[in-house]
Length: 96
Image (cartoon, rainbow, N blue to C red; front, side, top):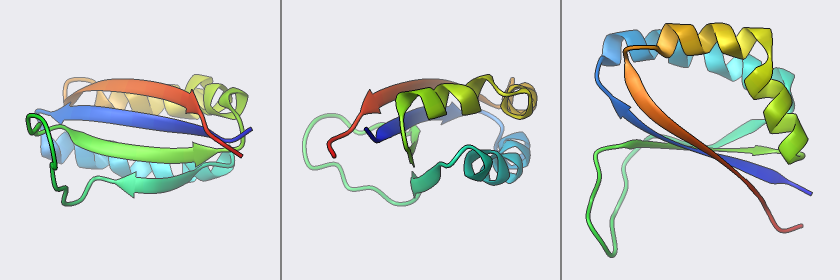
């Protein structure tokens, strides 16, 4: 069953965060993921707006997301992101 990784990040240091962004595409691809949304403009139709960056990725399964997240490569990328953003990572199963 497909799984979606939803990331909300409040960026505090864009220059440092951009270094993290350079690392993630190859890691995501290695574990079978693909970016669906990677920041960009948004339109809030209801509720309060937020300045958080929103990223959504699709993987083959929740297990694939866990393998990516727990990989040595991604754990190293997390260290690059440290101090540049406060982030929330949510994984949800999708519909087939």
